[in-house]
Length: 39
Image 1 (cartoon, one colour):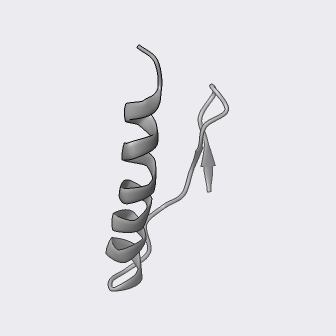
Image 2: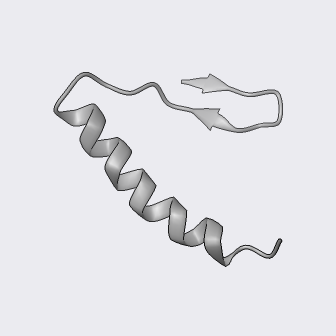
């Protein structure tokens, strides 16, 4: 796990099949949330 200076925590992708599946899951969860944020 890596932490960006702004406090963001980054998790490295795992090897397939788990990594791509996790990426797809987190994309489905976060993209709708980001669209709800005010500009």
